[in-house]
Amino acid sequence: MLRQDVPPQPSGADHGVPVPDPERPASAAAWASVPSRLLTWLGRLGVVATAFAVFEALLGVLPPNLTGEVARYCVAAAAGFGVGAVVWLSAALLRARAAAAVEVPPPGPAPAPAGWLPELMDGTYEALQRGVSVIEVPGRGPLTGWPHSLAESGPPVHPTAFGTAYGLHLLLDIAPYDGRIRAGEVAETLWRLRLPGGGWAARSQGSGARPEVTAIVLGALARAGADPRLLEAEIHSCEALLDPDHDAPGLANTYVVTNVLRGLLRAAPGSRSLGGLREVLVNGATADPARGGHRCWGAALATGHGNPAPSAAHTARAVVALDRAARVLGEDARQCAVREEGLRWLLAGAVAGGAMPDLDNCQEEVRRPDQEDPLHQELLSVRHFSAAWVARALMTDGARRTAAEEVGPEAWEGYLATAVARVRSMQRGGVWRWEDGPMGHPVWMAYQGLSVLRRYALLVHRP
Image (cartoon, rainbow, N blue to C red; front, side, top):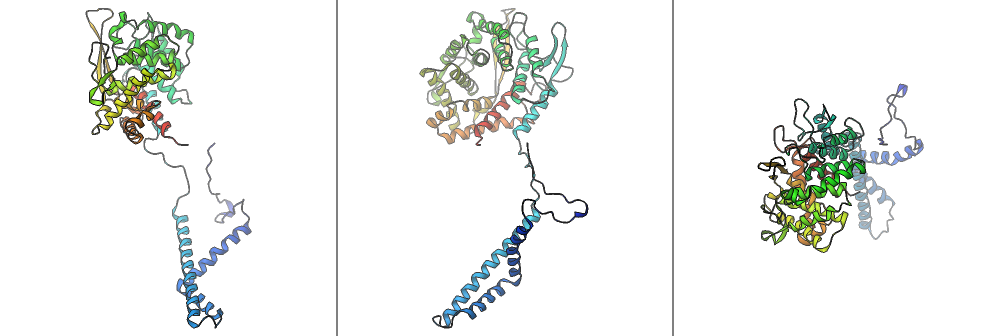
């Protein structure tokens, strides 16, 4: 319970009469005020008058044979000067206390600083409530979820698996005590959005399930406490989607592999596919001569046929995924070395200084043969919140130790603070903005931004 001390309020016939402190006897209060009244009285006499009075009194009291007349005068003058100084200082102190008692307002709750985290989280929840779509779909029943963006308006928009999964993640992070949005209804909507053949896909991916979206949905459902027996069948379906004969372009893409690895670590930490996925990611790192030869990642894994040009967003994604895998599965010396090299590559970007382009957002396109018509390509547009991913990588276990060996803890703290400040600057009232327009406020971006600020607040907190 919060308590606030407030002064007693006068009432009735006692109006204007001070109320004594019930824990302090009146006699004690009276005796405590005696020195104050004496100092005030002495102060009114004036410093010079008080000093002269002490001088005259001592001059009359000191014995005449005190080593001559000059000594008597010196002792009396010194005593008078000392007493005068004490009286002046005491009177000044009493005046300052009286002024402070008049000018300082009664204590009250401190105002919330700008960007206060609870206030920001309230703004995110309000945005989720405004943007939630509740519709009835024939054959699927009622749906409660979100499309891709919180800014999609007009008539209720059909919820998507991707937007609803990240909306559920946000609800579980914010954990409100009211039921304006029920997490159970959102989780049930994800089950209803399941494709007829099993699994889930993004809105632009057609009717076939894709592993990166399926794993994200399974991770959200597992966090929400879904029945493990229901999850098991979908986990097996997701693992089947990892067959190179089924999705070779996906397994050559850093975004796809890191999404699946993080999702399965949440939903199925005992999955036998996790070790193989980690090996795909570790083997997909490439050395960058421009940053000390440290290994890093690009949009395409080095084992594939795409462009593995170094990318901060993809390197940070890989570091976060490998860190989570290490906590669940453990890691050997080689896996640890590759993960730490990814951190060193990111830290080398901070040392390069200047505008820190590693924190700039970026975008890529994941192309696959269309599942229904292989002559056409399926196109998935992916946007990367780079500052959020870099901040998450810098807050992983062991990042501080790696930074101490590479650039020092001060440089690590400064780079992390810069990345977090960039994350904070891209939101207004708890809503993160990629750009203006109906697609400019992605639900996933709000989740990533808020999770970074929460993690950073815990990291810097000192009880």
